Each structure stands twice: as C-alpha cells, then as structure tokens.
Amino acid sequence: MKTKVDHFKGVLFLMSFSLLALLTACDNEEERWTDVKGETKTEIITDLDARRIVSFRVTNPGEAQAIHSAVNNLEKTITVYLPAYYEYQYLEVAVTLPSKTTISPATTELLPVFSKEPVTYTTKAADGTTAVYTVKIVIQQPKLIVEEVSDGSPDFTINTNTSVTVLGENFLPSYQVTKLFVVDAQGNKKWQMKQYNDGVDIGSYYAWYVFFDDLNNLPTLQPNTDYWFMMESYQTTKTMKLPFRITN
Image (cartoon, rainbow, N blue to C red):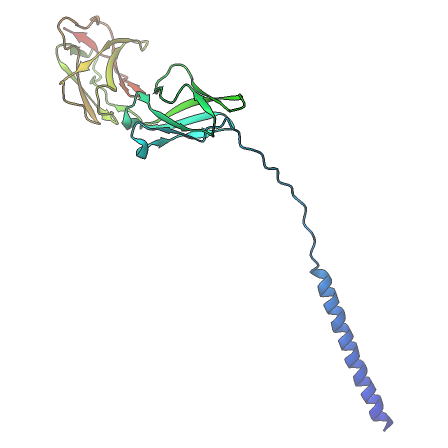
C-alpha cells in the first residue's frame, strides 16, 4: 500500500512541475510583447502666403483648352510650356489669386513670347506685402532639320532671278514664322528671302523662296562673295554648312 501512495505522489509532483513551467513560459511571452510608446512628434501648420499665385493659365486657345503653367511659390517662378505649333507671338493669360490679392501688370496686358527683357509679375497682399514672380516660357518644338541647297561644288552659284527650294523636317507651315535669310561668314543677316507663291503656305518638310518680289527692292548681295542660307522657324534656327555665291 505504501508503494502505491509513493507512486501517486510522484505523478502529482510531475504534473505540478509541468504546470508551473507552463505558467512561467506564458509570463515570459507576455513580457516579450510589451508595447513601447513611440516618439512624440509635433506638426507645425502655418498660414498660406497671401501673396501666392494659385494658378496661371494661357487662354489663347480658349478657357476650356487653356494651357496651365507651373507656378513655384517658393522660388517665385512661372513656367509656361508652349507648344510651337500654336505659333503665338503674344499670350493672353488668366491668373487666380487669394482673396484681396492683386497683381501687376494687369492680366489684360498681353505677355510677349520672345521678350528680350525678363518678364515679371508683382503680387500684393491685403497687408501691403509684395512678391515678384519671373516668367519663363519654354517652347516645345522638335529639332529643325534643313538639307543643303548647294551640291558641294566649288563656287556653287544661284541666280537671283530663280526660286530656291529648301527641304528638311519640322518646318512650321507658315511663312510668318518660318523664314529664310542670307547670312555672311559671321552669321550676320544680309538679306531676307521672300515667299515664292503668295497665298500658298509651306509644308512641314519643304519651302519655296525667291530673292525678291518687287523690282524696286532688289537684293544688295555682292558677287564673288560666300553666303549661307539660315532658316528660322519660330524659335529655332539652322544655318547650312555649304556656302553659295549669287549671279544676276
């Protein structure tokens, strides 16, 4: 009888030990997953600058098709991305400003595309403070490619009574913006070629010109002198590499 009691005590001891070990393991697991409070962060919210420009738009194509410009209120710049095919010389603009903020010059004034001087706008908030924004116009136009008129022979000549055909790529199809000049070795413009056929526009890869369209306005070019053709198409220029000389 004593042997059975001792055996029962031994089993009871083992069960108690196992339960104690399990409880201890649970306690350790709880300690491993204790939450740690994160670092406190403080956000500072400031008022928007009343002198800022909310939006700047080019409205020549119409308000519904307006060209939205990039306004950087930190660097105080307005960047207008203008596709060359519009062929604009001046831009009509519309500006959105905060309440009670004014701008000068007035947006009713036309913005020149090819200004020689920096163009700026000045905003003025209700408290009298001002900010000056500089306008940058980026014309999006593909590279102008012009083929040589000269065949490369020495003393290649062109008769001023004949027309000149210029071939290439990416000509803007308007004689108002795609022009051909005769230039000297220093690149100085010596003569502007005239439209070959009045009323017929040029193509995107060819153009026809003549030296004159009025007998009272003949070319002032000199014989036995090297000249080059230079094409201007909106904001891009390309000068041919091979020279030519003229005959009358």
